[in-house]
Image (tube, rainbow, N blue to C red; front, side):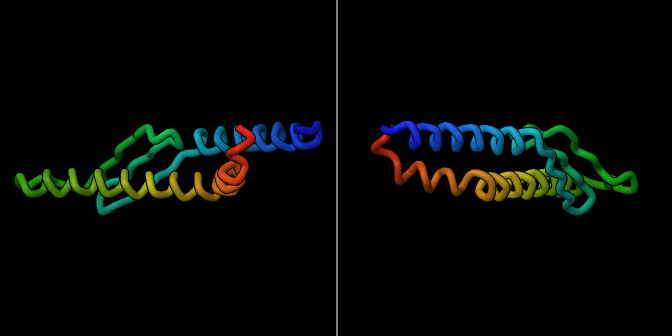
Length: 102
């Protein structure tokens, strides 16, 4: 490899690391019904908040609450995946084409 190509690869690697760090440090919040979840870019659930006026009147309410928590987490994870694709997708395509160099 020539020096110019090596510098380009090193620059691309630095940009990828910066983009990955940005994703990891981002916070994603999603609301589903009476539930709001806050998740980090590393997919760590930081908070689950339930609206104050929500009352449990029976077992079906608990099941519904659980479903809302799962749905809100899944929506937040989809936002993380979308951001990851936006920030890192171009690098993955480039690296796929350069597989023989690595």
